[in-house]
Image (cartoon, rainbow, N blue to C red; front, side):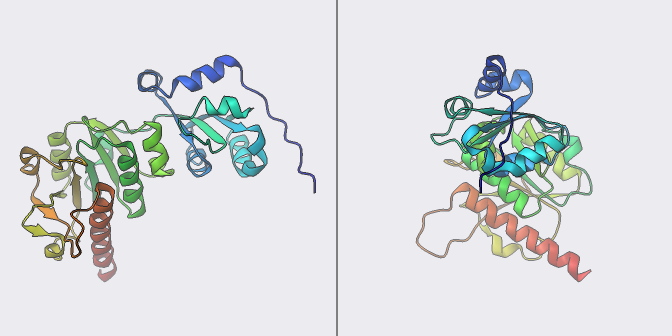
Length: 275
């Protein structure tokens, strides 16, 4: 069966240059726009009103993404078809996935994200690796967190690698960026959340918190290499270690975040179900 011929316009060189420029942090900050690559992430972006500005499809892959093309058309989003060479210039991957969107930034103020009705928040403190940051956002989304806060000294949330690692989760929950850690913790505490900071050397282990995990909680996750400095640990209500029963020296940041978030989410859901 011969597939239906799809007629898509090609972008001008000016449009391509503007998209290509978003690979640079300075341009993302100046324009308030960022790039999203991959079908799943673009699909989730298109579900959000007034977020996607344009979608670029690789000519050879258009028929693989007819659903995305239809979604773009229904949303009134500008869409283009581009060559293999041109789509490669607006991605930072070795093998582009065939669809890239230009989106408007979507972070929100701290006061808007952390309100008295939130129950689970993640604070990323000095997380520098974009893949880790994106994976933490994805874990927060998976376990029903109400918001993710990235401190002012953390990696940029709109870095293409961060966005890609989140696999669309950046569009599912409020993101707060560029906030001082103490300010973020104060806001969480004012909203009624207890604050736990992860620390592999802590005397309290996750399994010791059975009676507390069901309460509204903010988890503070530290840097991949050195964790949280003493002055930051002291800002929390308690420092908590994830127990390790095997021979591994430690867990990586994203894995530790997943374990802590799962523990809190499970306890909170159990408490709600019990009435």
